[in-house]
Amino acid sequence: MKTFRGCALFIAVVSLSASSAFCQETIQVQGPDTLILLVQKLNQLYQRQQPQVTIKVHGGNVRSAVPLLLKGDVDVLQSRGVLAPDANRPDIFGVPVGAEGIVIYVHESNPLNELTIAQVRSIYTGEITNWKQLGGPDQRIVLYGGESTSGVEQFFSEAVLRGAESFGYEGKTSTKELLAIIASHPAAIGFASFGLASHVKPLRIRAGSGSAAVEPSIANIRSLKYPISRYIYWYFAHRPQGAVKNFCTWIFSSEGQLVVEGVGFQPLDAQERLAGLQKLGLVEGAQPANARR
Image (cartoon, rainbow, N blue to C red; front, side, top):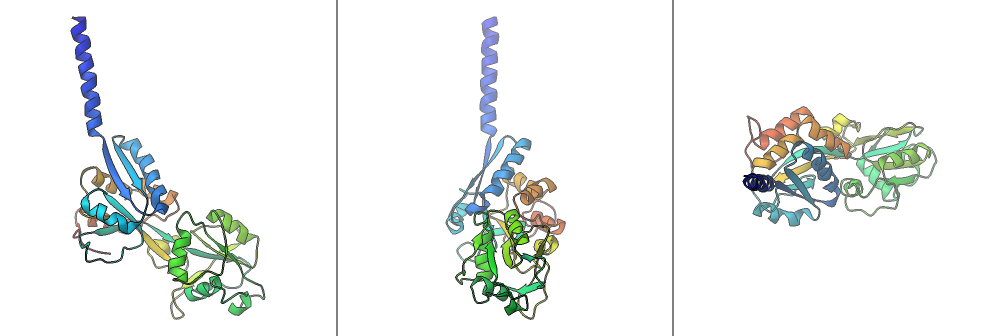
């Protein structure tokens, strides 16, 4: 009798283990290396609530991941900014999961309060080297830049330099470090993610000479009103189902958006979060799956 009970217990344990292993689900996410940290942090927190789900993230070129998304080998494709339209992938659609902006900082003593993107570009390409050329003091401009590992440097090159070669600047490892050096150097200018520090002034930016100057506030970055801002997108080949659906619903929650903010991006406002849920068909009032932003 004892032997029978022991065998029954053994079979029950084995069955339970097999059942648990069978229930384990993996979500595959791929995109640029600079977005790997986002998914790693999301996975850490999400697994506390859904331990049976693992989110695996892979870096690499976005374009090379598109065929994998279409084949179903990848569930989510990450992108910094909108993917260029392509007739070969008409069914791919994206939703924003966060926003990022590049802020231009100067010392608080600098009399300038705004610049155009073209002026910022001229500063970083060496066409403008002294603040007096912009109506400021007769001081040589000292250039600093944000960290390269987070994607800020690449974004600056695309959105501001627009293919032009940089004159050369000293890069800093974090926004905090950049703000600290600018606070101690009256002739400095630097670019980085959104941040606040004493003795440092963020400049308003004009998209062009005839455009209004826009403050780099959190609200303006979230809404993309600020000229040097963009969304972080997640792309899909079809509306998510099962574990992917639950995970996508969670990232639009307050908890999920806190993770987005924790890695240096701006969380979406309530309206954009609702729009994302609707586009993915996760709430009523869903938009067509192939609707593009």
